Length: 168
Ligand code: OFO
Image (cartoon, rainbow, N blue to C red; front, top):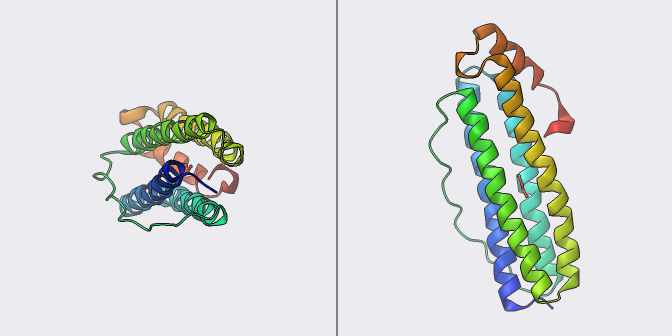
């Protein structure tokens, strides 16, 4: 059975994954309104990923005999001001999530809850991939010329992100 501390920690992380999904939904909607349909698709796909992370936590908590508490999801931050700003914000939010994941790994280690430690390893790996994904997005925008990116370069980047199911 999960300890009370770990149950609370995992529940908080479950809500954090839901918040991450909302952030991606919000940025995806912004990108769509700004005319970047490819970027928008990419971000919508990623919102679904975050929702599936949320479900993983939910199912694990139940499976270990603890209670799930569905809580309010914090609102996403303001809309990005540019594609570069959008990708920066995505990167920051993934870094922040990695820190939260590592904290849970540490907690499970301290409690010698090896089942939770093992469960968390999937997320450790996933976060590495997600940070790489965010860094790749930042590299792409840099190559396109950052804030000074031309319409053509942004168009190409947008087209690039339209159909890369493996990236999201
Ligand atoms: Fe983007 O990460 Fe969930 O865990």
